[in-house]
Amino acid sequence: MKSLFINKYINILILALIGNCQQALLAALSSGNIVSFYNANDKIVVLTSQNFSSTVYQSKIAWLIEFYASWCGHCQSYANTYREIAIDTWTWKTIIRIAAINCYAGDNNALCRQHSIRGYPALRFIPPETILGNTSKAIEISATDANVVKKRLIKELDNIPKKNKLWPQFTPVNRITLEELYARIPSTVKILLVIAEKRNDFIGRHIMLDFSKYRDQLAIFRTTTDGKLWRKFNVSITDVPALFVILRNRTAQRINIERNSSNNIDYHDLFNNAIRSYIQQTKYIKNFDDREFEEIILSKNALKNAEMQQKLVQKKNVTDEILDKNTIYRKVNMVDLELALSYMFREEVPQIKEIYGEAYDALVQWLTVLTKV
Image 1 (spheres, one colour):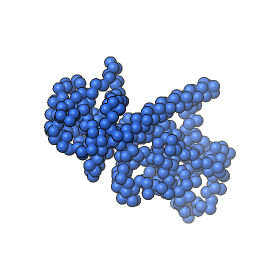
Image 2 (cartoon, helix red, strand yellow):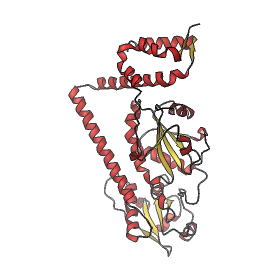
Image 3 (cartoon, rainbow, N blue to C red):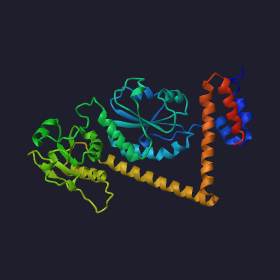
Image 4 (tube, rainbow, N blue to C red):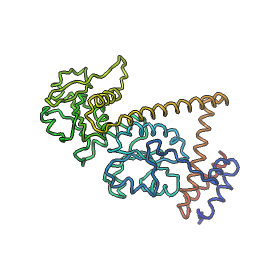
């Protein structure tokens, strides 16, 4: 029976069958360079096989984790989007943290396999207090646009059954009086806000998470237009979303939001700015640090500027080389192929002690095809 003992002969196979036509692959194999996409400045927790379990499992907060491989072209393209998610959710950190692990580095590959990672980049939501090793609790989230991912995170946070008293209350308060609403909040609360919005809007829940750090002093609720409470605020359906502060005398005072005529209004930023201004004016919230919100704005602007510079450089390179779209596409795919091969031969294939039969024949045929690439 034909068989191949991988650990002994794999390097010979690579050299003999791939040869000089895959110099980039061989360079990657010999150098073993591992590139980490993120660091603490990205507001992303960098995980490894050594700190993963102690950080994520049985944690009091939830986690969003990106499993990526540093050789993966799609992961490189997605990195700035993931940075944007981390920046936008930085003030949510008492509820959820954003993290990443490079499955190509060190012993991380085995851990990624334990979490059934089959492609990159892969996002997983880990609920709080998940028991060590209970990978079935990890919820897959598509690696897509930052706003889409944030909305999905809000949905998953809303679905968590066990929440402490200070956890943001996403459920709308629709059948309740203002007196009853006041009875729900701790005595430490200095400001009570209500956001009136449509049932499927995310503004209220997003704002709750933004200010979750101050939830012992700032209570934020949402009421929706399919209930009764919002009608007491004397606003029409065309006026929502709207923001109200509930005063100690149990009356509602609307906080004006500066709106423009644009159809693409970012209500989240408008509400966020209005609440920050109200807190600074009233000075009711002790130790309120607006610099944290300013830092987010600066980080987002810096990220956008970096992306613009990167696009300009890429555009210049394309112009200088006078490359057509198909040529660029082929080059990108060749780099991805070479790096994927490097990963496969360094990490995946050596885990198989012996290949024989149909698997052996398929491997030989596949390697033969590679020599013609």
